[in-house]
Amino acid sequence: MNEDEKKNEERNEDEKNEWIEKTVLCPDCKRGRTVHWRPNARGKHPWKFHLPCQTCKGDYQTTRYQPKFCEMEYCNNLAEHKCSGMFCEGNGWVCAEHWYEEEIGFSSTGFACVTCWHEVGSGGH
Image (cartoon, rainbow, N blue to C red; front, side, top):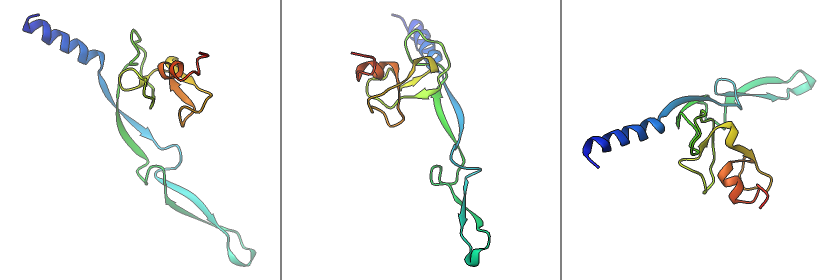
């Protein structure tokens, strides 16, 4: 294999695994703050106060890097979910088509990529 072929192969591999920047908003708060209510003395209406969100530490939005496309072989759908299992292909980023609900408590979210889903027995074997 000559040097030009190696460069073309590396370029094709990079294009296949192109990573993108994605902004993710915290689902547990509004602009980094959560609303709390404190009862007021003498039966008056409670008063509202805000505290920084514990989930996002007040950041509200974070930027993460993820592959543009599903990492399952022969799939060109956009990557949406990240599996944290140990049997994943690539870095575990899969599309909605390869994201399954698992019923045996393998993952903390209750979902796993199709590879992990089959390996841990949720697929019926």
